[in-house]
Every structure is written in structure tokens, then in C-alpha cells.
Length: 381
Image (cartoon, rainbow, N blue to C red; front, side, top):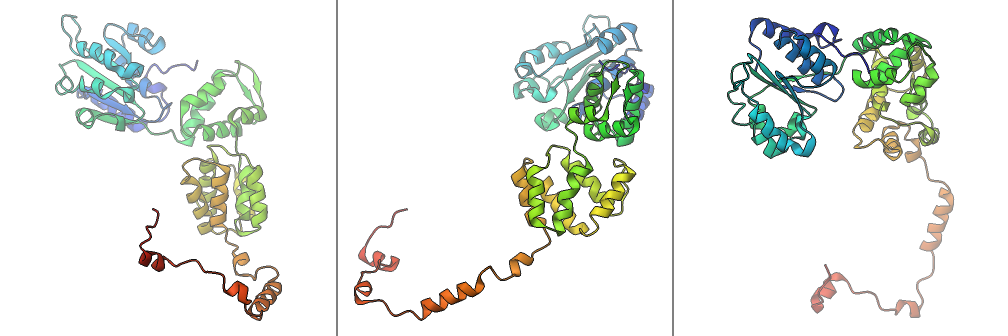
């Protein structure tokens, strides 16, 4: 497993958050009820545990049990609220939201997966969280605070963890790769690739690297296979067809690889096309984008990316629809349809054809709706 951070100094990124916590720790003004919110894999639980460690004066027992072994101590209690909606657990937590006769000066309770708590479980905390006893701290970690009751959230101080920047991800991964003694082919570009794929989430990137034995040699091709890598080269052919051959574009879409990294890559390509800097693409990619998309306008590219990003679920059908709506060559709509002369000739023949014969003319016609209404016929709904 990746080495777990044992102090705020070990954390890469989140500088503003760390400064905020350190400032309030030093002043003794840390909020007693904090909600750590953010996507999975950003380190919410690690922040909560490190904060508990600091509150406990970096007690060696807390460091060993809580940080390294993910277990509770008498002063730091860990709970997972995803089991059965957390109702039974909530009652146990409620009973521990006081120092009682423990003789402790401080107690920290950390609730992970707080978004999975049922309404009944959340209601258990409504009274106790309004005025927590001095020295008692409650930290909730959640990927979605919208699942928490507004009344509960109103009593907490919410800290939102952002995705790491590309530079922070590269710094973190470079350090971990070298700590494990891995020999990555084209190390710098491969780490950039992993960082872009992880989308600012350190845990999934570190877990990927953890899968390779220490000291082993790892090729770029192996990494690409593991992460189902989608490169600029995979995307440019269809983009270049936005102002070119529609048939060719549809053919490319039918064979191209699709995954969740498509939209992020499209955004980086749009940055380059718009004259902005991209810190996720290589200089070679930038030159290739400028050359191959020379005939595609920024407006066309923006529209295509907007339509793709708006898809409820990325699919080949959705991509085709976005391509057709964004394609700038509309000449096929204004050009005469094939065999126009034949169609005109057939129309003229119909117009000059003799009138209907008597038998055909005497064939009764279907009554109109007004006639049916006059007859009192009830129309089906």
C-alpha cells in the first residue's frame, strides 16, 4: 500500500486548506464539527485523521493505530456509516459525543461515508451537534454533502477538497515512483500520462503504481493498456473531419476507442486551438493539433465538445449525433438531390396523365372528420 501521510508536510497540494487548519490549531479556534467534502480518492479521511493526530499532540499510539492501522483508540474513534444506513452506528456515536468519566481532555470522532447515513441516523445527531461539549470534535467525510440534511450541515464547518492540479499530481507520482525504485519507460511523459488519466485523484494513481513490484521495469505500452489510455492521436482524426469529409468522420467514430478521458482531452485540445496553454499535453501534441485542426474553427470545435460533454452517458451513438450537429460542411443539404431530372420527368407525366376512369371515380371516398361529427360518430381516443 502507498505510504500513508503522517503529517501535513507529507500532503501534496491543498495548500490553502492546510494553512487554514494549522492556523486554527495554533490559535485553538478549530471548529468542533467539520464536514470534509470532495470526490472519492482526494484524501478526506487522511485529512480527518491527521487533524485528529494534531489535536492529540501527535500521540504515538494515535499515530500507530489510527494513521497506520486504521483502527480506533480511546481518544480517536473511527466509524463507517455505510453499513445499514448507519442507524445503529449513529446511536453508538451519539453515546460517545461526550468526555464523560473517561478522564480525557479531548476526543475525536470520525465518520466516514457520511453520505450513506439514513435520515433517521442523521436525525440522531441534530440535538448533540448543536452544542458539542468542550474538547469533543466530530469530523464527517462525504463525497456528496447534498445527501446530508440541511439542518445538520448548517451546524458544521464544511471544507471542500479540490482535485489536485496536474503539477501536484506529477510531483506526487514522481516521488512515489522513485521511492519504489520503478524504472518507467520515458518516465516524465509516462507520469504525465498517468496524472492526466487520474484527473487529479491521487488514490487511483497511487494504486496503479502500487500494482508494479518495487524495482521493476514498466513500459509505456503496459501503462496505456492498464489505464485504457486515450491519446490525442486517437481523437484528432474525428475532429479534423468536422470541416471535412462527413463520411470519413462517421467511419472514424465507428472504430475509435471511447472512455471517460475523452472530454478532458477534448478540453485540452480546445485550449490549444484557442491559443491558451495546456499543461497536460506535450509540445509534440500541441504542434500536431495546430497542424491537423487548421481548417476547423474554434466555434465548431466548441460546439462539438459542448454536445459531447452534455451527453448523459458517453456512447458511440451520442458521439455521432454530436458530430453531425457540429459538422460545418452543409453543401449536401443545398445541392440538388440525385436524379432530379428523372423526378421532374415523372412529376410531369403524372400531371399530364388522363383523368380517372368512371369506375375509379365512383369509388366512395372516406368521410371527413367533420362529416363523422355531423353523423354523431364517437371518435376513439
